[in-house]
Image 1 (tube, rainbow, N blue to C red):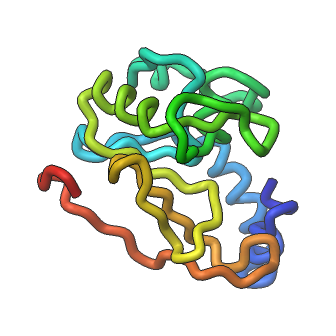
Image 2: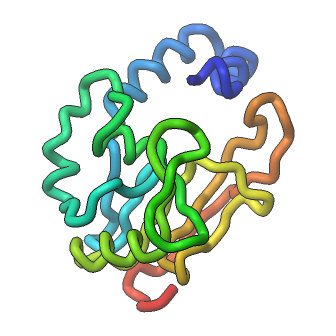
Image 3: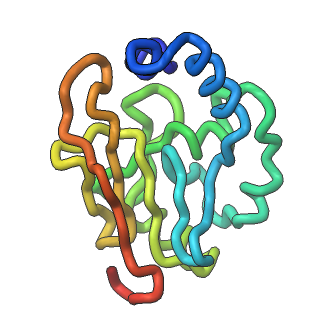
Length: 163
């Protein structure tokens, strides 16, 4: 992945081959998701093909394995929001697309306020979707060796409702 989408080349040109290898090792240890102040769910990809997924289900995933082509780990890494309600097939061929109703239900089930994700190029560096309950943040200025506007700083007040 790092080679295909330009990260490896960028690290090699700015740092060294040693850092390419170090990043690969670090990526294998990163959590699949994180919760900030018990209210903000941060994930690379998106949400799930089934309702009722709890944070405890996510914590129970064996992180130290190759990502499978289906299931919770795959969906955390590859799923994307869609403008329509419900769920649909992913344009990527892995993961799925999910609507605002799926986001709302997941947040309610886990007493959360917001999903913050990445994983998609956004013209302005970010996009707010799903009635303000999902924010996509994109921060790779040289993605696939093309210049993109990227978000340099993202901040929010987790104690303020409705933001």
